[in-house]
Image (cartoon, rainbow, N blue to C red; front, side):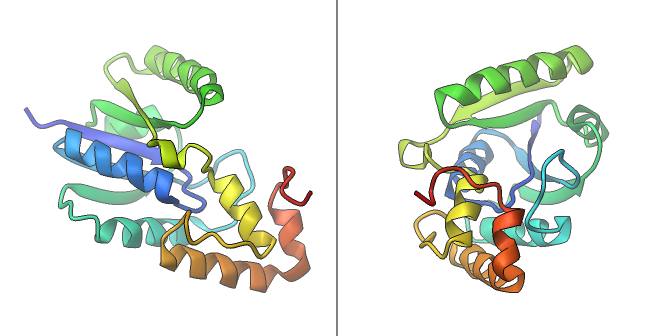
Amino acid sequence: MKILAVYPGTFDPIHFGHIDIARRAAALFNELLIAVYDKPLKSLLFSPEVRIALVEEAVANMGFDNIRVIGYSGLTVEFCRKVNAKVMVRGLRVFSDFEHEFRMALANHRLAPEIDIVPLMTSEQHTFLSSTTVREIASLGGDVRSMVPPHVEQVLHRRFAELGEEGGKVVPMTSLRD
């Protein structure tokens, strides 16, 4: 029996933590569909088309022929049903992720009990990584080479150069300015 897994996210932008989860999920399942969500309830730095292209380039050199990248809209479980996926992969970084992911898994199970949620713990070196952290560091001119592939770093720097001073308004800031 072939098992199709969906790894959904906004990937704004994709980083090494995402790539770590994708690599490990691709080794576990017959096929992995990285699903890039188009309209989350948060502000995005990149369009869906740019995010899809960044993910495609990031996974192109991973050595797996069982990974596909696609954009989607609407409920993730409905997308999983549409593509006949039986598994949804989610990444867990830190303890605070668990509560959020647990609530989402319960809600998704209520909506689609036939789809299993498989959480994968990120590798230790990526526990601090989030797309928000990457965007903020890049927006402040920081070095993100250890966090994202080179093509993502270039696109981030180009995007923030386009935004200029407006970049700080697009990226929600935490405390990295201190």
